[in-house]
Image (spheres, rainbow, N blue to C red):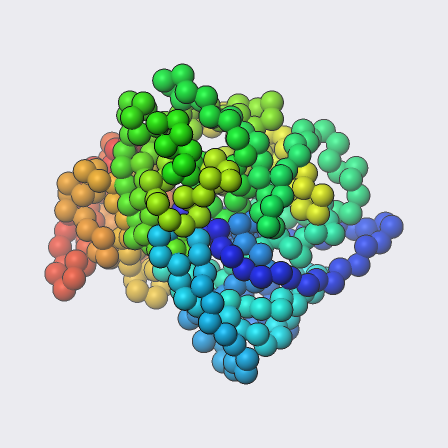
Length: 391
């Protein structure tokens, strides 16, 4: 789910040269983009790239592990998706972040409990402000970010003007449902969101989606965003249109939150990586222009959630996948899975021995039955879970 966070402005230093060789940054991708950086020249940090954020944010546990002393700090409120904004510590001391040849110094560094939302893999979040001097190309196929200063690299791409408001970037899209409903408006370009499209609660109310869409699946997630618990429902749309391109039969989430980022009415929703990964994209964050062309995945089919639950992967720190949300009345709930349960093993194999890719592959085998070893409170038990589409 989205991590649209209210962070602070960022200062950067970068050189612009006439014959500029592009900076190439490799990233790890599992629905989120992870970039390896260095903090204060020596500390390794695995940062989640998020266009719904500014500057730099660090996970509180990661920061505490670095031993960096805090001289100046203040408390602040961190809103985001969810109904309860977090009260966080904001470090005012100088930190330096290095990414290849780019050096930037955020004037503030908020600390938050991030890993309980996205998993132990994330040491922090980095926003796009340091990329303002560049045309930023994101190649999901090769897992590379390439930074250019020459506009010539946008030839052959469709260009779409973005609306820019408070360091957020909004892309016009159209969504059509099987019932003939047409939803048009600006969606936030959210590279920190691993899903397809999450429509805001005002959008759901305006188009009466909960009433008019025939097949929906309701869910909740206690740790869905920076603001904690989120609620909503999912359905299978007919198409999402971006520029001249149509994506067929995508899953779409609709928030029913009454507070937090997904209750805002200034845009129709969050557009995430499960859509964006089907394109080779370039973004000029300074002028607010989005460029795209299909990368061969445009027509790939979508599969909805098959497990009936949401989880955080803490296989290294807790030797478990921690359940943080469920589809109401879904297959997981019927099988006896509960929020805060910990999955210790899948089909007899400890999750600590499985890679993230292995786990995702197991959870995508439609109509298969998995044997889950679960720790529920102090009770260890084995459940059988049939994988089937939630919508």
